[in-house]
Figure 1 (tube, helix red, strand yellow):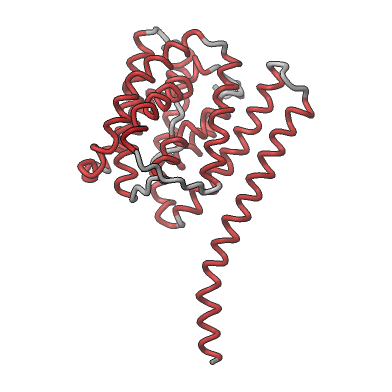
Figure 2 (tube, helix red, strand yellow):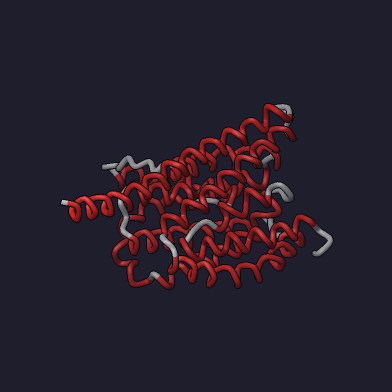
Length: 295
């Protein structure tokens, strides 16, 4: 392990990802996968990550079990769509070209991260109507990449889920998608010795990171923690997208890395808006207080 730069990097990044997951309840795969894909193909990486996520998501659902009665009816259409999506995505994973699959992963995830960072809110009135197709899309994305946090968080925040309902809904969907995907991978024979080696190397990071993230989230604002995590995620995904474009010979070095630079600049602007807005929110009450004192 200590002679393998891929496993060393993976161990470090899964520790960070587990901290994020422990704090937010999601984010493990969306941080781990963009970095890990630099060293491994989805077909080798996914089976290891999905087994970790079965345990993580089960834990998330268990600690939020009291809120399940508030959430389960809202997520039934999404769960129905998941079954179809996971089946389709798992079949595609077993046949797809690894580099093109990496390109798909980065290209789909990056806009979702930036939309979250921008705080986009467009409530959907026909929530049940879009549930099945949304669930199918999430199932395909998850079984291909083990990533589903960005679209789920985007939808739930968009629809105004309160904290307890958000976590319970997330737990229900992610337990279903990870369990279904783990079963589909088994039937398709995707588990391998390489996947087992990856699994063994990341388990200690997960065991340390989850409680650490739960501790940190109690000592800092949730939105600040979430926003910093998204910035890291966006920068890594942008870098991965640039690299895979070079590997596929779709763009040359300078042109490909200009995409990464663009992502950094966009995220830096969104960070400025986020922290500038928070600063204004903090300062306005103070300014009005001193103005009243002067009067």
